[in-house]
Image (cartoon, rainbow, N blue to C red; front, top):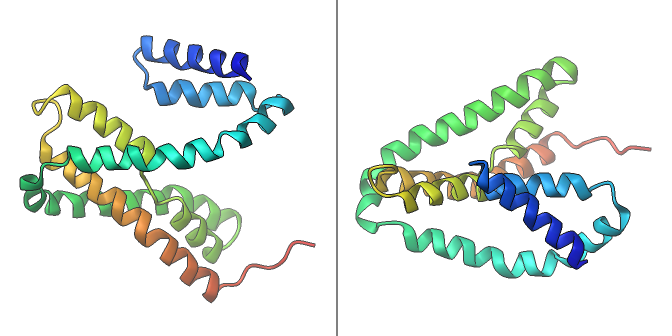
Amino acid sequence: MLTVVGIGFIIAAIAGILGFSVAIGAFFAGLVFSRDQKAVKMEASFIPLYEFFTPFFFITIGLDIEITSLDRSFPLAFVLLAAAVIGKMLAIGIPLWILKDLPTALLVGASMVPRAEIAMVVMQKGDQSGKDVLPPELFSGMALVSIATCAFAPLSVRFMLLRWPQKKIK
């Protein structure tokens, strides 16, 4: 287990050295070990740690928001939210509509709309770089988009599943 974790950290660190997000390195480390059945079983043992530490990440995001920037960030948040929803719905929805049908396209598109961890990791890195790199209004606006997409996407998906029940796979 320590070997897998150690190699995962090395891959993540190499990605950081190359200028990529450490999250990208962690993603590639996951890909490397995804074929190893022992590593996949071990991954399940990390779920409690993930569930424990995730709230701390979002608490940090909330603490980084400048309250005075919130009122100025709402117009930007609406634009970013529209771009997030429309972009995901078109990018995912059009190919699925062509290959399958409209209800499936809308359902999968809506399921893909939430943006949280990676978007906020990128925004947090920008915020740490200073206000000249990332204005507080943009950071706050993106945090509002993350909150909105994570709150409303599940409600949309639930509505669609009730409206268009999926066929059971035999």
